[in-house]
Length: 348
Image (cartoon, rainbow, N blue to C red; front, side, top):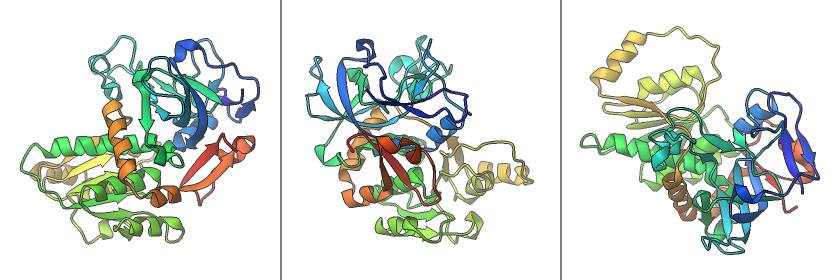
């Protein structure tokens, strides 16, 4: 069968293998036919050789962590042949740490977790894959064109879950949310904010293209420029760029008892001259919280599935700016400046 692989740490090792072995039964009871995988920045980093880890004893890693497939067989009875399914990316560490032991593998304390298509587990960019029942998320059939968006949606579902948990520390009646960055994570964060009834503002560099229209279609307000120029005091800021200057501005922008969730991952290596004392004073005196959020556990995947089912399907479809057949895999993994979400199509 076909599989898209890399040799982690080796730049330009991306290739399509035509005779990759069938998934071993040890991977899981549920056998799945791949429909599509989404491609994100993590995939690009792995292809560039800066990230990624092959399974034990292997030199190659199958890519793909934003999965979508159709069940071929499930002897466990969890799902049924023909059902749409997505595979949860992260598996708990084998120790396990206190969090992994109770299913909170997104909060792993020792870093020994594994992740499909990223760290120690083969990914979903292959014609067939297997998954354990507890890591299989069934989807509404109506989500067939966009189900690969479940993984990035799970990331922001976790972010909002934790925002709400932190907000419950006091009487909290938030009204305004600012999202910095209008990539897939930012747009999905804005979607979940509108579903919660916030007045939503999205800041991005793009002045043209699909992003402004996608934001406005949510009933949100689109901005360009800098965070500091915005004439608003948000109760919640979801930072999705990882750009150091934007991160710092986001921390300073939140209003009293405000919450800033950082989801963008910075590359490092850049220093900024800023007044750390003034930032500290503001965070302390206004009872603000800044926290980081990454990955998701089963609860968040289920929340994400419900959020996608409630969303406007035409809006979700518009997030996918390119659908590329597997035969043109190299094109799919070559970023362009106009992409929001690129999908590798296993049915074409």
